[in-house]
Length: 269
Image 1 (tube, rainbow, N blue to C red):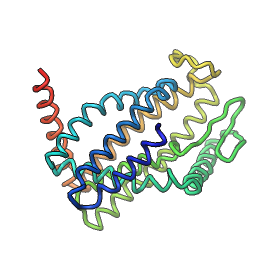
Image 2 (spheres, helix red, strand yellow):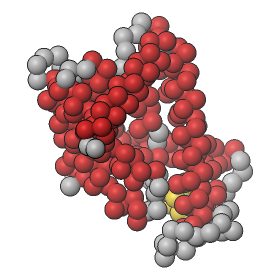
Image 3 (tube, rainbow, N blue to C red):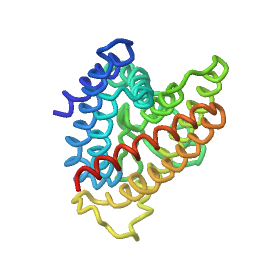
Image 4 (spheres, rainbow, N blue to C red):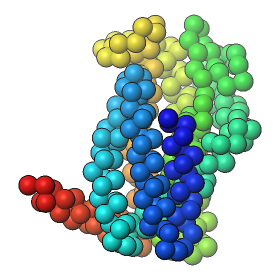
């Protein structure tokens, strides 16, 4: 099911970039599809003891209802949000759906992660083209470990409002190199923390039968994702400083959703 909704949402987000009367309907289908992706992924994320994505899936339901209502009312700020999502998919889709390109990115990331591990004098073996091992533990690098999703999202955010070529170039430099480099530190930290079993002293709340998985959970799902979230918030602030109209867009978007959700809640009483 997940494999169906991802390309579907991608197609309709891209179609929503094309001006025309169809735009509101392609945007609605796109948002419904992406929320279906989130909902269908909940069982797997819960099994992996991933806390962030199930919460996002839960919050996506009122967001979706408000988004549909505002699109039907032709609220421009939601079209801007949809454009941001469309640009994000435009960047992400080639890596996700063209396997040689995605694998090339994974190979680059695993090579660079190996360079970082060597810099820290950490011994490891590359046992597969996308897998690093130290001791008895292995870490597989997949597309989600490359930072491409975060890069696509932040560049999409930057595309939500009209910008000059200078702003576009500076936004690219502000987003792509820092996220890529930070992601290498993230991968390096997870590899070391997991294979060295740094967090065995923390409670094992995963229930996983896999030996040593608790260290991976704390390193990857809690610490790395938490730090990445803080970094992305800071990066968004940098984009707001670079593109002042982006901050205005964010404020308008928050106001629009706050008002719409308040109206929905009021009618439900």
